Length: 289
Length: 289
Image (cartoon, rainbow over all chains, first blue to last red; front, side, top):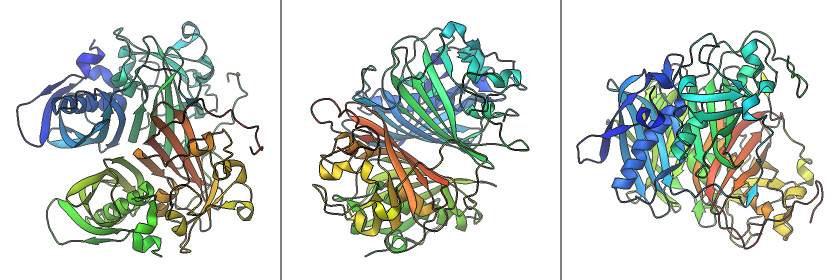
C-alpha cells in the first residue's frame, strides 16, 4: 500500500529554465474507478508547487492555501510529470502555476497560492460550526467494492459514513443532497494541509444521496481553500450538492479537524448524468429509507 | 459613462503564435477605491478567452462556465493586455488560460472553462432557492460616496441593498455576515454570463455587516461558476462570510436572476484586517441596530 507521502512524491529534474520539471508516479491505489482521484492530483501538483516556492526563496510559504484546478482529461495511473512556473513570490503569499502532463499531453492545469498557515484555532467569526456527526465508531466503513465500480481509494483513505447519509450504499438514498463522513489516512499519517486537498474531494458525491448512483461524477473544476493546519486525529467532511441541472452539479465540501475547526473547503463543478424522472423526495430528517 | 460592453472590450492583436494577445483598457468607472473590481477583471479576461475559443473552432462555446483567478497584484485603470493560451478545445467544453498584463507585469492569472449554457430553467434539484428579498424599490440605493473611500463602480452597477443587511452604511452593522442586494447594469444592458462574473463580486463585502468596515477586502482567489443564461431584469445577489480568521475571509456569493433561478456562484478567499475586539453579537433577525 502506497502511503500518502510516497504516493504524492515528486522528484525534481535538472534544469534552469523558467519552468521547473518534476517526475511523479500516479499511484493506482489512489483511484476511483479507473482514474486517479481529483483531490489526490491536486496534492501531487501542490507538492511540486510548494517545493518550487521554497527553492525560489519563499521557504516561508510551505502550505498550499488556495488551489484551483481545471481538469482537461483524466490521466491513468503511472508515470507523469509536473511543470511549475512561478507567477509571483510575495511577502505573505507566493503564487504558482502547475500542470500535470503524461505521455506529452496536458491533463490538469492548476493555480496554486502558497503561504504559511497557523494551527487551527478559534476563528474570529464562523458561520460553519461542525454539524452533528455520530461517533466515528458508530459510522459505516465505506468499502472499496460496495459500488458497481471499484474504489481503490478506500484502501488508502479510511472513510466512515454517517448511516443517515449513506443510504445510497444499500439502495435507499435519503433524498437529501449531503453525505457526512469521518476520514483518516490508512497509513496512520496525521492530516496536514496537503492531505486536506484530498479530504475536500474524496467522499462519495453528495448526489449519490439524491439517487444519482450510476457513476462517479467527473470533476471539471475544483478549488480548495486550506484555512489552517489541522490538529492530529480524524477529519470530518460534509459534501453537499448545491444545484443540479441537466448535466452539471456544483458541490461543496467542508472539512473540520478533530478539534471541530473548519480547516478546508472544496468547491467543485462536475458533470452528471441524471436518471429518468424527478429527484427523490427528501426523507424526514433522521429517517433512513 | 463606459457601459459594460465597452468597458470590457478587448481588441485582438496580430500574431500567429500559441499565445493570443489582446489589448484592453481598464475603465476607471469600474473601480472600488483606486483599483478595478475583481469581477470586472474576470469579465475582461473571460471575454478574450471566449473570443479565442470561438476563433479556434469552438464557436459552440460562447459562455464562460467556470473561471478561477489568482490575483497577483491590483492593476491600475488604463491600458492593459490579455494573453490567452488554449489548453484544450473539446466537444462540450473548451479550457483556456488568460493572463492580465500591464506595463510588462502580470497582475491576474485565470483559468477559464467555456461552454454553451441554456437559459435558466427549473433545475433538477436545488438546495439554494432565492431567499426573501424586499421589493427592489424598497431597498436602499448604494451610493458611490457613502463610504470612507470612493466606489466609482456604483455609478455603472446599480445596487439596492436590503435595509436589514445594510446597517454598515449608517454605522449599525447587523452582526450577521451577509448582505442582500438587487443589481442592474446602469447602462440598461440585460445581464448575460459575462456580466454574471461581475455580479458575483460587486456587492460590498459581507464582513461589512460584521463591523469590519475600514477598507475593502483584497481578493486573493476568486472562482465563479456560471450555471445558466439569466433572464432579463434585475439580479439578486447574496454575499455571505463563511469563516473569518486573523487575516483571511472566505466569502461566497450566490446570484439569482429575475425568475428566481440560481445562475451564478462566486467563492473567494480575501485578505482582511480585523478590528480590535470580538465580532458584534448578531442582531435578532429582522432587527436593525
